[in-house]
Every structure is written in C-alpha cells, then in structure tokens.
Length: 169
Image 1 (cartoon, one colour):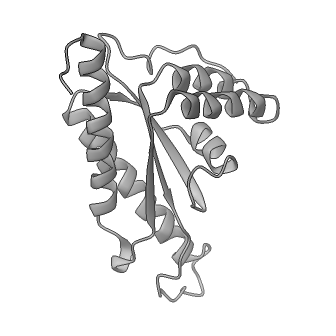
Image 2 (tube, rainbow, N blue to C red):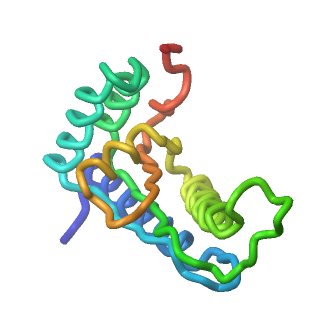
C-alpha cells in the first residue's frame, strides 16, 4: 500500500509505534523472570468507540474524569492495553510485611512494562497518557485477559490532546 496523505502517514506510524510499545512491554524485566504481562492494541474505530462509550457509562459511578478521559480515547488513533495476570512468583512473604509480596511484584511488573512502553512512544514522538480509567473499562469489556489493565491512548498531532485537560472530580 502506498501511503500518500498526512492522515495515512500518521495513522500507520502510530500503529507501528503501538506494536513497538507492545514489544517493549513484553520484553521488559519481570520479577524472578515470571512473565505475567499481556498486551493488546486497539486500532479499529468501532472498538475504540466502544471503549469510550463504556467509560462514559461508568462516569456516574466512578467520576466525571471518566467522561473527560473517554473524549481522549475517542480522539486517539490507537490504544495500547497492557495488563498483568496475578501469578505466584514464588516469593515467601516476611511475617512483618504488610502486603502480599507476590501481589506487589506482579503489579510492579505491570508498572515496569508500562514505563518501557511509554518510553518507546516518547522516543518516536507519539503522544500518550497512561489511563487507569480506560484500563478499567477495557477490563470490564473483557478486551484483555488480565487481572489488572492499564490503557495508553496514542495520538500524533501538533499539540498533545492528553495535556492541558480540564480538571474534573
């Protein structure tokens, strides 16, 4: 396919970067080498719209920022979903430790994977924002088989759509 228009160039580039982000998440270091990270890329407009609509419906219970974030999702070219499955990493919990260390390390794996992914987006000049709101909606819609999901919407415009957003409760 010959890419001719600015819109086609941007869309193709953003989706390529989404794939590189997924690779960054997959290859990010994991606690004790236990791979519990899962990824998916949403690029179909209908699927992205379905996610935005779910977020708007959740706003009544979760807060108005779900509506604001839904607008960002709707205006995005693609959305990278990164999640983790809670697995037994094989760490014994010290008796004085307040939280389950296996759970903490699973979530830490997710954080490192997301950090690696957004670094990749940034290196390629693709605007992004980590959203637990969109991740929660994606998890509710069962868009990714994971216990915890974060979403990273992607856009490439002259001004980032993810910043200078109105503050909401």
